Amino acid sequence: MRWWKAVGLAGAAGVVATGVVVVRAERRRRAYTPDQVREQLHMRFAQAASAEPTTEPATPLARNTPGIRSRIRRLFHR
Image (cartoon, rainbow, N blue to C red):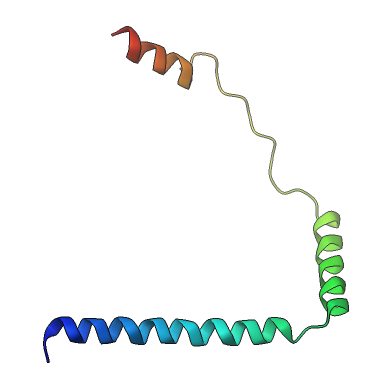
C-alpha cells in the first residue's frame, strides 16, 4: 500500500469519528423537551443577572499614545 493511501484512509477514519461524536451530542441535546430547555435558560439568565460584575471599568488611553489614525497619517505622509 502506498503512503498516500494510508494518509487518505486515516483522514477518512478521522471524519467518521468526528461524525460519531457530533451525532451523539445531537442526540443528547434533542433529548430535552422545550420546557426543560426554557427552564435551564431562565436559570442561567437569573444567575448571570444576579452575579456582580468582576471586571473593573477600562481606563482610557493616555493622550500621548498614538492612535490608529495618526499612525495611518504618518504612513501616507512619508
